[in-house]
Image (cartoon, rainbow, N blue to C red; front, side, top):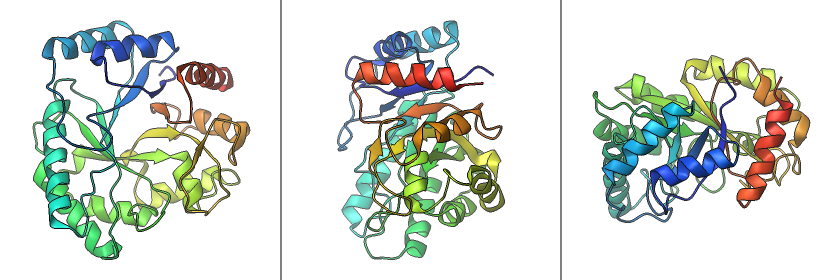
Length: 277
């Protein structure tokens, strides 16, 4: 399979515009927010625009897209109104994703707000079971988290506990964020094989569907979640060379979420392509 690499793009000008921007950057996938990152009502879908993107992607050998839920979508909040709002967003987003079928939809599991991870895991799984439907073509991805505050998903065990409670397991997967798992305490710099073996043991590599490709501003186990440009942080260029060429990862879509403008993303995509073996 070819190297599938892209970055996060603005959805302001629609679907096809994102595809064309990605191509100009040297990318063959991209990520986008399904609605304003702070949540709220989503714009109506332009069906023709969505179809044009699908055609463009097929003609230009794009890999799967990795859409991103808004940051405000906290399915396990301690406030009922916030949970209800999150559930509505999730259900609506999954219906909207069907206009660009067979892609990925990534979300942060949420913050338990001192309720405890165990209670939060039950709430998250319940929300997923309400929103997932058998006919959907989208795979929903739980993102590995850094563990700041009361974030759920810092450990592989927490993600596995959610997956175990989801009914439609064929509709669920994991997006591994390189900054997040390093900040959470997984040593992907010194022992990438060991971390991936642990992922396989706890969750199963069959669930690993995408990689958020970010360096970290912080040392391991800092639980901070501060992204850095590739090669300028604690992970370093050599680690990313190992990541993008690793047999367990190399066929997945790699999405950059580094602190960059478009020109910076073009440079990083070019850099990562040069490190590909």
